[in-house]
Image 1 (cartoon, one colour):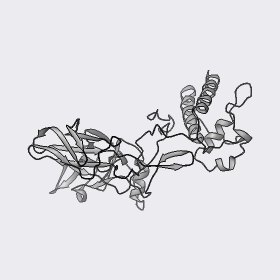
Image 2 (tube, one colour; image 1 turned 45 degrees about the vertical axis):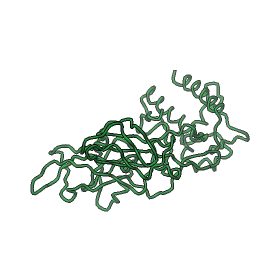
Image 3 (tube, helix red, strand yellow; image 1 turned 180 degrees about the vertical axis):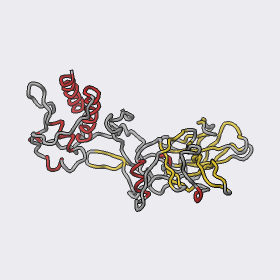
Image 4 (spheres, helix red, strand yellow; image 1 turned 30 degrees about the vertical axis):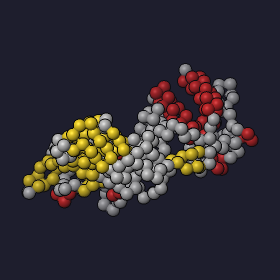
Length: 327
């Protein structure tokens, strides 16, 4: 479900929850080592052992199981030869805060930007379709080059942030600076690019560490976090959008003038899911009955959490309705 896309625009059917705050002593850690001959132990002073924040060990791009993991130290099963890349990653244990009916992850900074690094030959870097393609590999994962059209006067950070967004498989190079997805903050990346080196246009490859002081992570499902009613109906609308597209080959349009009165509509209209909710609540079965009932006093109360019973009831009515609508 988390990887399903809306046919019309390619966005996620189920939107993730963003965060960048972690429990004290259980933050995200990425530590890169280049081994010396016979090295078997790797010191990570900032790591506190916790089952909620395990460490993953990548040796030359391959995940391995260590002999032991302790606070501040990782020990591998066998000594390694010199010159081998070892990356230790702890993804962190997100902190949660109470927000109405939810215990939810949250963000502690808002001036976020994608992790980046200046290339060694930044000043003579050039992009050309007539030369070897640019490449980016992170721990064996190949990313795709995203071309961002940045015009004079544009804010580079903003344009790249908007273009790259939460995409996980893209990278950007602009004026000799490489930008990677948020989840790769602190990771080593192998970059292949073109530059004029000693008067010769040539391709070169180097490893950089991309970093950002504030990222906006969106890489977890948080299965134990409850869902607000409004978010649930946003999900239903996204599912309906895909079904409509596949059965009719046309894009689903929001209802521009829904007729049904929702008593707390004024508070609803300030939410991102307002138009989707109003569109769905205006739908009727063929017998003229509304598909989705409102709550007491004809209110929706979109910020309230849903029970499992409510979710099952609404899903059942949704399935019954779309079956009738598209049969």
